[in-house]
Image (cartoon, rainbow, N blue to C red; front, side, top):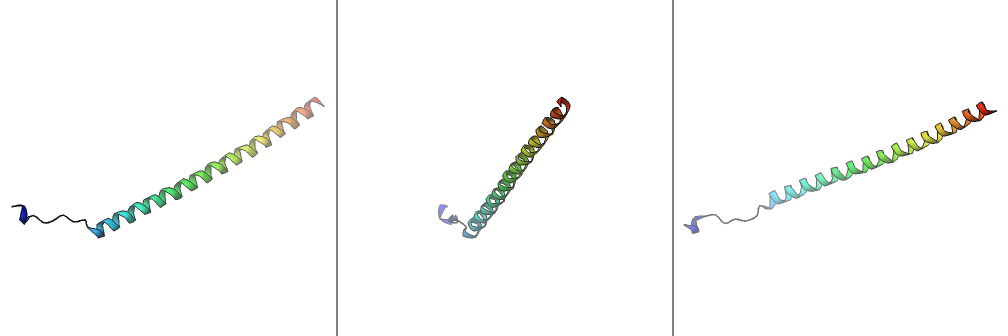
Amino acid sequence: MIQHLPSLTPDTTRNARTIARCHAQLERRRAGAQSAARYVIERNALLGFGAIYFSSLAFDVVRVLLS
């Protein structure tokens, strides 16, 4: 009975497709992580410049009011 069962061998084409899908998914995640990191850096830089601008504006207003 066991002699009539087909032998189990790895399917090389399916293996290659699976590896290609995994590499593609990893590349998409890597690209998404890089764009997310760039967004965070840009947002923090914008917030920093805005804070500096508003603090200098507030300083000028106080200086004018106290003069």
